[in-house]
Length: 242
Image (cartoon, rainbow, N blue to C red; front, top):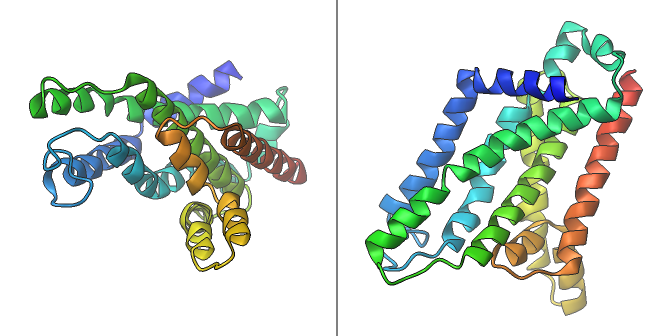
């Protein structure tokens, strides 16, 4: 599995498309958080609110993650080499885990590039203010968990469709429904129990609670089950190909 991860990381870090996507992620966040006159603007608020970054990031990741993942298995399927990959002397679990971890590593690297600028902006705005590092840590953990679910969804889609455009589009739609549409549907419920039930099906409420430092066993369990479920679906799809 280590060899597979290294191979995947070499592909990503020697591929211009990944640097373009990382630059896009950093550029969009910087423009909206620092320059555009929006509710997310950090400078106009006269204090650093790290929640702005963590509220904005999922929307950017809806584009970034499907773009990175759309070639995860599509190349092998299109070229007819997927059978060679999955019949190698390495378990399907390790192949899928290696693909997942390599993409997750790229995204964690991308997230870490954003941390210094929080500290710099904080000092520029108010030298007496301090970032709650505990909240910031759990916010980054929540972002990693959210991106992990999006990655596995996109990988599963890449095992179904051959063309990268279809993979991107379907992955985007599923992640969009999971993050936003379910939450939107719950808003139309007049029954509090039904509202809570529908809202908790989607990923947004669980992500938002963790991102502001509220540690709830239900939210942690939700992410764990989602990661496990989509990983199992990915394994099932690989076995069907085999």
